[in-house]
Image (cartoon, rainbow, N blue to C red; front, top):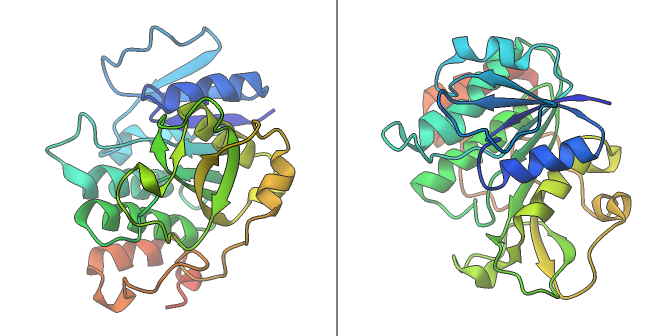
Length: 254
């Protein structure tokens, strides 16, 4: 049994993650914003109030946790933008850990290597996780809940080569994303891997060991294995490079 901190717990994917984590026997701590709607949470869920943009509110949230699952987004934080939440939230949580290693399961998005303001900050969050001392699983899901009733077979892709910007890139249900995120924290075959997640025609995946085993592990760099090299580190903002160095200087290979 692990103590799992779920960030984005009141969101459309996060609520499924809470349920899945409890069903898998984990103890669950949910980071929630002030006045968040938590009426659907069971009494077994420990709730900690915090704000991803304020590191001082995260110290208690990360205390004693074994794993952290990120399903957060910019909803409700629009004025702060993608840097402060999609990226900054991950940076602040890693800093709040103060060097302690836990497992991080981070949800970003399929197509994250297509250059845009939103994607670039999500990709920087991925890079920060890889640069840290934490083991990790980074999941890039396709379009939420666009799958048909018979599209239940989970497929992991790598290289982020589906770049249409529409459901043609791949579809996946929210509860299946939650299944993958939660299983990743317990199964070593999922560790230090990055992949796009879609569902295709077929029966629901039950063997998660084989599913994760089919995915190539990342190298020691800051980018995912098989990703295109289209975001040079020497062109990145100094504040981003400094944050990666602060997480784990020896991990930055390029």
